[in-house]
Length: 336
Ligand code: PMV
Image (tube, rainbow, N blue to C red; front, side):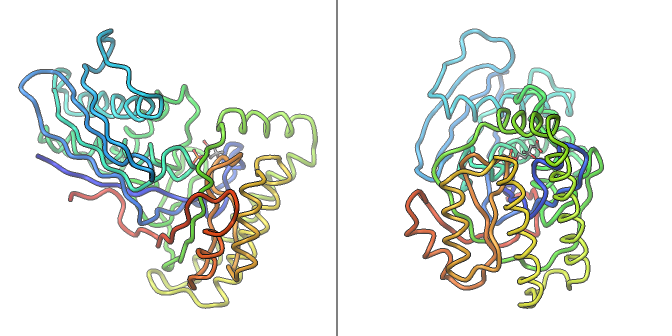
């Protein structure tokens, strides 16, 4: 049996603008998806998934990957998760040149599904890692990140950036600009996350921003300004001492940039009442800064705060289903 885990992520800065070639800085968070793989004698893939959402549910799914018409169709959320697992299995089989490899797979995740925290990327990264190890062909991290990206690209019909899968593979803070992905040094950032229980439609939100950008020069300038916010944020991180607690001054400066970034995303129409309410609740409770994370429209916000107040405030915010702390995960994918 092989077991691997990989972390989810938040965008400290830069979502949406990254689609137009600006840099973005996603950060891995200490909330992980864990995938256990046992090779089978036949070519079947049997998946058991526990707690794929914070509400938790258990489902068993048996089928063959590929074009087999006899695959059971489980409920929609599970079906989506299974799509990612199928894609991960296809990548692992290709990487290990074992097209008929079968597996019993168990998935556990502490990352809410579909809320912009990179749950699918974490499952895909941990799944490819565990399956290639089970076949005796472990992948080097860059190749693993690339295969995980290809799996997401396939499931999401070409609407995937490399940010989620690269961040989940490498851990820590990363910088993504087009196809150029690299890890960057960062202090221990004290993230607080608020989740409204829903999810935005990434494709629709990205198209909406594209239309605004084509119609108005000031929308294009807004996206370029997000790029400037990201570059300022990167400069702050590079001056900090890695893997130490950040100074109050650094937290205040990063927080200001997060607030600015949220305002620009809001101007582009990708926030939502639930997200704005959570952002304001966190700020009013003393967070250094707060912004939506990911595509927006619903899902999660991320705030920066070392004290418990903003989490408590989020828990009492109407529209917030769940609030939790999540430190920066310095480790990406790992063997458990
Ligand atoms: O919601 P997420 O975590 O999939 O992030 C989407 C980020 C966007 O910049 C809006 C789109 C992208 O692919 O980069």
